[in-house]
Image (tube, rainbow, N blue to C red; front, side, top):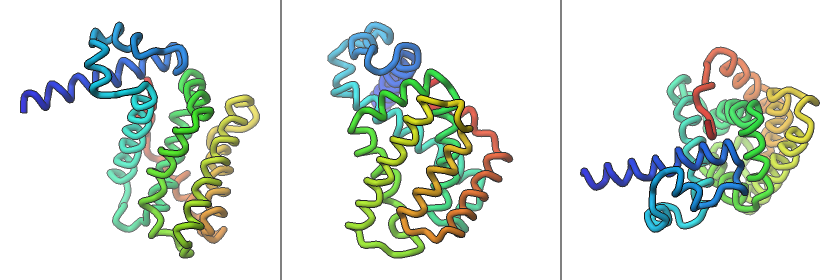
Amino acid sequence: MKKYKKGFQTEQIILQTAKQLFYNNGYAKTSMRDICAESGIQLGTLTYYFKKKKDIAERIYSEFIVRLLSFVRTNTYHDKMNGIQINFHKQIYHYHAIYSDPQTRSFHAEMLHSEYIYQEIILKLYNPYFRDLPNRMTKEDFDTAVFADSCLRKEFGLQYINAPQAKTVTELYVTIQTMTGRLMRIPEETTKQYIQEALTFFENHDGSAIRLLL
């Protein structure tokens, strides 16, 4: 038990150090050796937990998504909501946490240019909800829709990062979720309902403590 606890603590030190460095310096300008120097952890120990820097970034995103989902489920009657509705709720917090802070936004821009982020993270995000789609799709069509969705999220995200004054984060959310609904063959009125429910939930539940980095 003690060994497990120590290992967990070491892993968390690595992640927290990486978050701070990614936030202050960006992804490209942070090396594995920088993380070692800042955390006081040997390189061999670091690579035992995370073989590559991208593995650290992926874990940061994954844990961020888990925290957001937990927040939504804790504060809603999630047993009366399907997975798509829960995801629509989660996404508005996701966008505000990433796009409202300039340095987090800058880090995320680097990730949007990295192929692995939307190859792996988006699939993890949507695969559990395949069974909840109101209009049944084949798995092949679903996978195609997920790929298209990842591309539009990337492009709309980069457009916002390049011109954040053009629209609010909430407007970005509505735009992307509307397109997601169409790709997933969700009826337009159902998509509007899910979006409005998420907006109302967001107005009444403060999730600002959940951040991607700092």
